[in-house]
Image 1 (tube, helix red, strand yellow):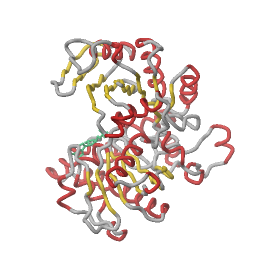
Image 2: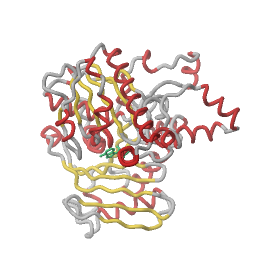
Image 3: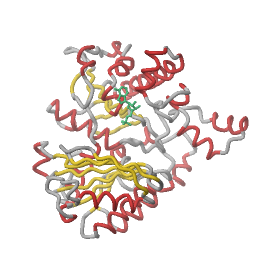
Image 4: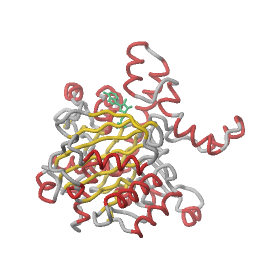
Amino acid sequence: MNILVLNCGSSSVKFQIIETDLDLIEKNFDKRLASGIIERVGSQSLITLQADGKQKLKQATALRDHRAAIDYILRWIISPNANIANIISLADIHAVGHRVVHGAEKFTKSVLIDDEVIEGIEDCIELAPLHNPANVKGINVARELLGTGIPQVAVFDTAFHSTMPETSYLYALPYQLYRRYKIRRYGFHGTSHRYVAYRYRQLLKIEREQTNIITIHLGNGCSACAIKNGNSVDTSMGMTPLEGLVMGTRSGDIDPSISYFIHHKEGLSFDELGVMFNKQSGLLGVSGLTNDMRELIDEETEHQDRRATLAIDMFCLRVKKYIGAYLAELGGSDAIVFTGGIGENSAIIRERICNGLEFFGLTIDKNRNGEMFGGKEGEISVANSKLKAFVIPTNEELLIARDTVRTVKNVPRRW
Ligand code: AMP
């Protein structure tokens, strides 16, 4: 089957076309046919499109909304210009898989989309006002443009974490707030943590139930996940993606009193505080320079910028603290697995995080660590390390495509 994977953000649409099916999944033979991204939807949009094995196309044109953006993608997909293997008309798209950020307590696994599911995703908008509206738009537009005859599946960022026990997911707030408003930790990046855990067990040829690891997704957004017997039992992001690790522009954990302190001192409204914690904090806020880890590392090495170093050190320390906490919570773990743009590519950040973890039995192999970037996958600890470390590139789109096939064919997933 050719699956169109759609990831609609508030002002962007990312897509991939992936050829996959039950037998291809089994053999790991599924393959990407095309990919692209439209940024700045709603104004002069930047468009990047690529059929696999062909040259990347970059264009700019005004696309006024998500409908116009998805329509543009569909027209390109079937154009002779794109020349995508096996795709001649829209009938060659057999199903659509949507990334949906928040599934709350309602959606604990991927589901076939119908009117009731759309209503359910709309009900979650209150919990993810920045993300779910765009996801719903993407679903409605795809249904309109492709017709309701093409099955569509929603894959939720929160679903993998639905196995957390209430001791992990509840906040120590008055309990009635959970009852009344479902205020609790949901966790995000679930598709990434799940994919990485799945690849880990494939690499080690072990069963799902034998998977006891800590996965660390370090990209522009960052989160850690404690996985026991294959299930997420704790994760660092909370009711929203703001909690936990230091991120590109998000603060991660802070004392909640800071919000009303700043509110009184600077007169910021709660909405403005939300913008500050989400968009002006983290690596950007501390360094005063950038949210981009590569640029910070350059500033540190070339100009010895003190605040670039401070931001990087705070970033690494926070990850280290979560690793320590999760090792205690899990009663030990077999491996730490790094993924995401920073986790997959930056040997220096991985080394700084793992420095000092020898106490837990982790020794990094500097050579192996240094060689792991640009999509490579494998172990980065020394052969006899008691606690191992791995780099496994994430592939959320592939997992969404695979879930789409399994959901359409009604085959229960093993992850
Ligand atoms: P993502 O959100 O997963 O695309 O990750 C984006 C982050 O990965 C940005 O902060 C990038 O600077 C960072 N990144 C990508 N490549 C490298 C690299 N070679 N070294 C350090 N950071 C990197």
